[in-house]
Length: 140
Image 1 (cartoon, rainbow, N blue to C red):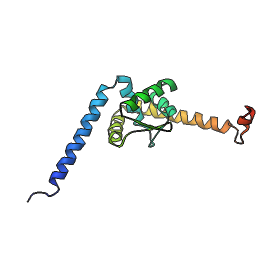
Image 2: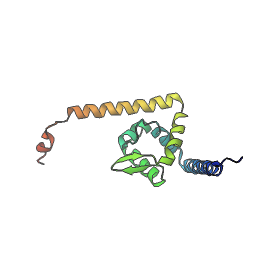
Image 3: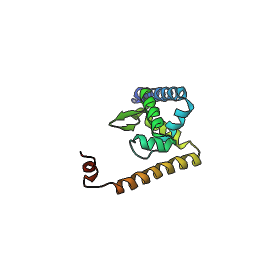
Image 4: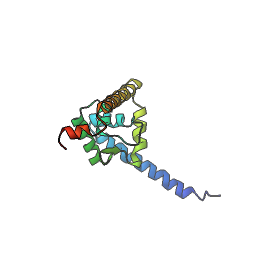
C-alpha cells in the first residue's frame, strides 16, 4: 500500500536538499575570511548579535566586522534590523553545523573573546552615570 504522505515527504526532502545545496554554493563563493567569520558567528549563543559581538567572535576590529556583516547581508546570509544581526531561518542550521565542526581550540578561543567583550561592556556600563549626568555635562 503506497504511503499517502510519500509525495509530500519526497517534495520536502528535495526542498531541504535544494536549500542545503544553495547554502553550500553561497558559502563556497565566500572569501576564506568571510567563511571563517560565518563559522564563528554560528557559535553565538543567542538569536541575534551586534557588531561588537561579531568583532569579538571573529577577532576583528569593529570597522572590519561591520564591513564583513554588510557583505554577508548583501549575500543574504544575514539579516540586519536595528543594528542587530541574525541568520535567516533557512541558513541558521547550516551555519550552526559549520560552527560545531570547527576545532575545539578555535571554538573555545572565539567564545572566550565574546565573554571578554561582554565583561568589558559590563564594566563600562557600571562606570557610566545612571542619572543623565553625562548628557548634562555635554550641555544636552
